[in-house]
Structures are given as structure tokens and as C-alpha cells.
Length: 336
Image (cartoon, rainbow, N blue to C red; front, side, top):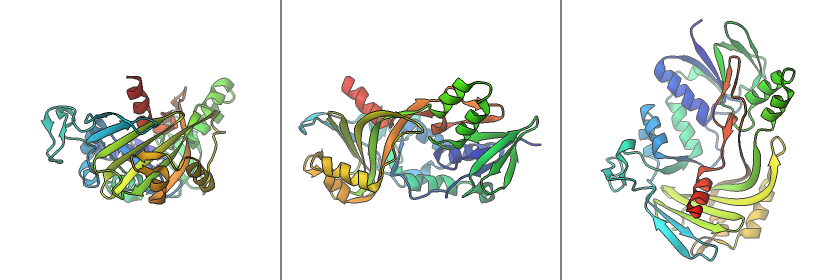
């Protein structure tokens, strides 16, 4: 049998892998338990090195048409005193960016920029570049798998079977693939099995939101505000919109027991902190009232101790979940 890759999960990692396999001529099937490109989540942050890969996959131009390059960052303390600003996200070198005429950028990344794009739009673009849509199976949830000397057979929750050479779990933080591997390890290594099931912890929650930009922030700007046990970030890199994030410290929890939050929980959090400013003159409540969509979620992080087992391998958030990169950048910048 020719090499064929079965991919469990059709979000960022799964669709990106599918595009790579398509480009290299390797057969694949993508099994997504929900719909492709759902109206879930607020944004995807794209760094220049990621843009370069997306360009190689032929999708960058479609993404670039949807974003405004990030040009300037401003940093405020809890009293809304501006203590630093820079252009590091838009000006990393002397090269000129031909696709964004007023944004100098690092030549090594061939004109790629730092920006945020709507998550559903990003996924829609990836999905649109898969040529054979018959390889994409929506509402097809991984239930189990069995290996043989020649391949792996996947059974879905609706009883269908798919056969391939390997299975790639690209199914996120709550990976079914990872849990199935953990179950298979239960007999031979109970400690490792338990570690896989509980590999992530959470000590922050975050409101991820997308709001109408009611003259909150100039296009291309980003604003950080630092406070004790909670921070905010707002980024205006989509026409007429602003992406914003509200991080709050929480007690440490571990998967699968990280909290799940409701809309009521989010409303209560906004009520508690709503008078605090995200930018001078505009509060968290102002941004929230202008929202297009928002969600309150725990921020899991961790690295799985085992990434593969037999003919099964995991990628992306299924095995290495880091706290939102901009939150890490906030900490790094503050330390400096």
C-alpha cells in the first residue's frame, strides 16, 4: 500500500499538515469531529517565520489580504502610565516589504509580517487550498484505532473505518489520540499512561475576544497593560476590528480537571474588572460591549512525555501546549 496518512483533527495543525502532504504528493485523509472552519475562537497570531511557511504552502497571499501589519507596540502600567513603546514587531531590519508598502521588515523572512487574523477566516483559507475536498471528512470523530504490520485502521464514532500507513493526532489540547495511546500504555507503563492523561496544567484563564474597532486603536497598533495577577493585550490588525485578550491568574489545575467556563462566568468577570482600561479612555467593558464574539477559557500548558506510539504520532497542541505566546512575550519584556 502506498504511504497514506490519516489525520485526526482538522484545525490549524491538521489542515497545515494536509497542505504539506498535498504539496509533496502523499495521500491523506483528515477526520474532523466537528465542522471545518467553525465560528469558534477569536484569532490566530502569525509571526514572520510562520508567514514564510504559509507562503511556501501557497496560502500567504490570501491571508495577507485580510490583515493589517503590526507596526507599533505601547506598554502601560496599572496606572495607565506609558512606560515604553517600540516598533520591533514591524521593523526588524532594513529590508522593505513589497506587499505592505509602508512596513520595513527583516529580509530573512521575505516580507512576512506579524499580524492577527480571525481564526475562522484563517481556517477557511487553509481549507480552501485543499484541492480534493473528498479527503476532508467533517463530523467524523476518532473513536479507536488498531495497528498491524502494514498499517493502522481507524474506527470513527459513527462506525466507519479508514485505513492508512500512520495516524497523526492533530486533535488539540483534549486529544482523543493522546488518550487512546494512554489507554494502550495502561498495562505496560501505568505511570506514563497517567502522565499522558494529565500532561497539561492551567494557572491562567483568558477572555479571547474580537470587537468592532470603535476608534479604540489605530490600525497596526498593539497595546499591553500590566497589572497584578491580570494583564490585557489589544491588537488592531484586521480592518475595522480589534483582537483583545484579558488574562487573569487562577489556582493551579490539571487536565482533565481544568475548569470550563460559561457565558455567565465571563459576564461576571467583566463586571468585576470592567472599569479597568485597556487603552487610555476605553475600558474592558467598552471593548466587551463592542464585541463580535468572545469566550472565556483556561490556558493550558505543558509538554507530553511521549509523542508517538507504534504507527501513531501526535503534533501541535496534542503534545506541546504553551501559554499564549504574547503572554509569554509580556513576561519576557517585563523582565528585561
